[in-house]
Image 1 (tube, rainbow, N blue to C red):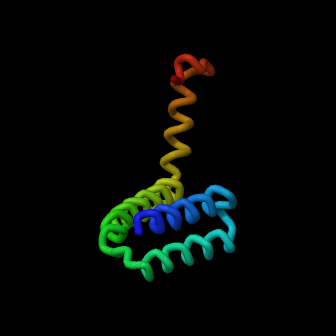
Image 2: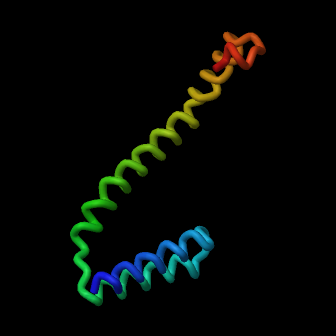
Length: 92
């Protein structure tokens, strides 16, 4: 059974690596996951791993959108550029 789970995981990774933004590859990954569950894989460990990562990414993207909307990033960039005085070495 381990060989079947490993083969399905490799198939899903190959689909993501081949064309990460493709709807067909997303469907391939979904089908591989559904087949893996049908073969007896437990969903609990996957949810336990994915849920915190999803929450973190949502929070990070929300914070980035708020910073971009407030103009804080542009002000910080202008301040850093002004203090560097045109010198890349001083900027870093």
